[in-house]
Amino acid sequence: MALTAFAVRSGEETRQVQMVCLDDLVPADDELRRIEALVDWEHVRATARPLYRPGGAGRLGTDPAVLVKLALVLAWRGMPSMRATLKAAATDMSVRRFLGFGLTERLPDHSTFSHAQTRRFADSSVFEQLFTAVLGQCTQAGLVGGKRLLIDATHVEADAALKSLRAELSSLDGDAEGVTDVSAETPTSPPKLALAEPRTGPTPKRKASNATAVSRTDPDAKLRHKPGHRTHLVHRAQVGVDPKARVIMAVQAEPATGSEADALEPLVGRARFAGHAAHEVGADAGYASLPGYAKLQALKSTALIPPQPGAQHPAAQAARARMRTPAGRDSAIDRQTHAEGAIAELKHHGMRPLQMPRHPQDPAPAPRRGDRDQPQTPPDRPGRPLRRPDR
Image 1: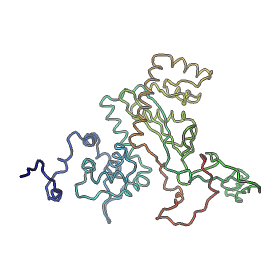
Image 2: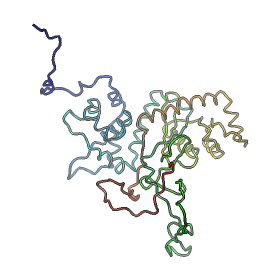
Image 3: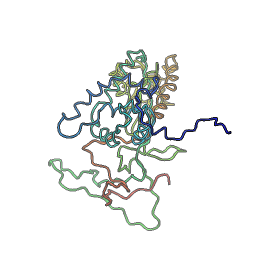
Image 4: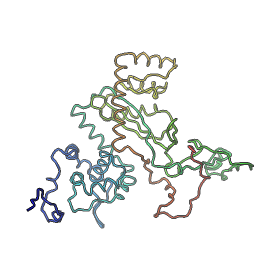
């Protein structure tokens, strides 16, 4: 007589109707439970309330706290997209409980979040006010030193392909909008465009650059090529970090053009708005410039920024002397540890390929090939597509 040494699971047990509480299925030490207790979600609803119409005909809108929670889960879990976040929320009890949805309730559609991100919340300060409120809680908990601010930047890949680059045509008179008469209030004639001279032989190889090409799907994205890496379209993100507990005090997203030092003044201003004194500002040599030192001096902040090699102007000599002091050496270590560390954590928590939000009054981007919801007729193009620069 054979004896069975294990209990066979037939699978029919999963079809049993049971009365369960979703709150009991999530551990007490769950990370999303802890995050939920730290944020005042009524403050989020009050901030977003002016962006919703009063109740009337039609169904009720999605709770703005749910939309903010979805964005938080996307960043915290490092999800590649909102579709992936909602797909994970369908089976993840922790995320369902965090959003406030039951086991059988239907989750919001990804298009609801997209509309809120690109339309409803695009020109509002909902996320910025939430960020400031969390910074206030960090300050009250003693996590912010409040004296030294460390600034660093990184490039974030844009959600745009090199195939979206198109050449820009310029007029002979240097006015892309038309030749304007000084004495008249309206343009007197359309711009005059030059045609290329006829040529013989093979077509020369052309390379795109930020001066000659622009992306049709994301005009703010800029080309970046680093030796040993592929050419791609990027944006630039800058952060200001307090070194005591690596708390991010200020952030700024911008096109990857110009000097990084141009963001010193707005980053210091945002950090001080959040309660940070910013008596000392540390950064790498990429921020070293005469205007940058002058801005920090006007803001009454000590610039702990090493000058460029070979710079001999008085501001560079003074900065070089400051970097030899104990405060300068500590600032360099803190920058490598906390500013660069914060950027590495941001890249892990959702700072993936992104697209700068488009203002509602901006022209819509050209439809991509293969989009079913867009007409398949080719759009009017200002120029011929350029070759990929890396070919």
